Amino acid sequence: MKALVIGYGSIGARHARILNELGCNTAVLSNRKIDFPIHFSSLSEAIAIHQPEYVIVASDTASHYSDITKLINNGFIGRVLVEKPLFKNFYGLPPNKFKSFNVAYNLRFHPIIQKVQSLIHGQSVISFNAYVGQYLPNWRPETDYTKSYSASSLRGGGVLRDLSHELDFISWLVGEWSEVTALGGHFSDLKIDSEDVYGILWKAQNCPLVCVQLSYLDQNPTRKFIINTNEKTIEADFNLGIVKEGDQKFFFQVDRDHTYREMHIAALNGQYELLCSAEEASEIVALIEAVECANKQKTWIAR
Image (cartoon, rainbow, N blue to C red; front, side):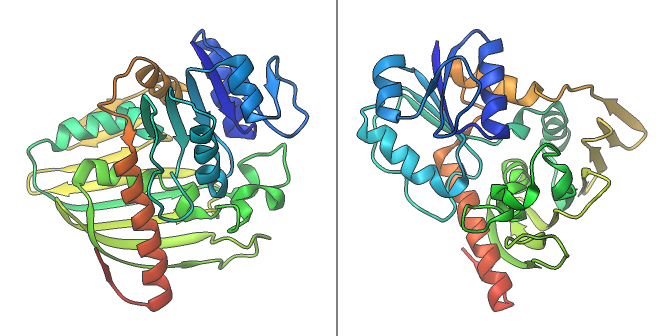
């Protein structure tokens, strides 16, 4: 299958490499001078010459809507996968004839998430506490973090959008949010104009208490969560590759590209069960905007 990756930052480069490893004939669209075998600087030229069947939108979050609109205007009707989050702000998806449309919340494909989903099946979840953090200057050691999209709120950066995987997989596991409050902002000495830490409290459809902290500040990278049900406590740690449930321990060895690879395989094969839909992704964008509103107004926001 012919694929096209729009954007060639660190994430776009990863998508392109994995797609080639999966046997796709992959091209990249970027206005920058890059070292990639098939490279275009014009979308219309890329579609006309390369004729992709699968397009990955990996540009800055703030550019997603315009890039999708350009795809539609250029007559693209194949499969589309957009990097998370879907949009910087809440927009409806423009009318289109895409064969499929999904958003790259790839942690749904992590065996830890899939194991936890099976462990809580049929359980009444009482509380869900999650924490994710990594020191922003260490994210992309080969680049100046102050010039990355993560550092710019205008480009769609900041922990709410960068680390919105937690918002997605929690919603996927325990249902959509119904009301939310939050406290966050730019509190550190990092030279950025986006938010560097957020604490979020919300009520979900199938869980009365969800608590999440997102951070650019952790010099010891952390991604973990604890779930309490009426019958059990489940602990999960992505960095250690472990899920604990009572005296039981489940270990997982996952390479860095595993979830991306599995996500692309599902998209290429039309296996949509785990893939994030446009509707689900739009709910995450709505939650992000509600979090920002709650933080600004110092109140609870209901759906």
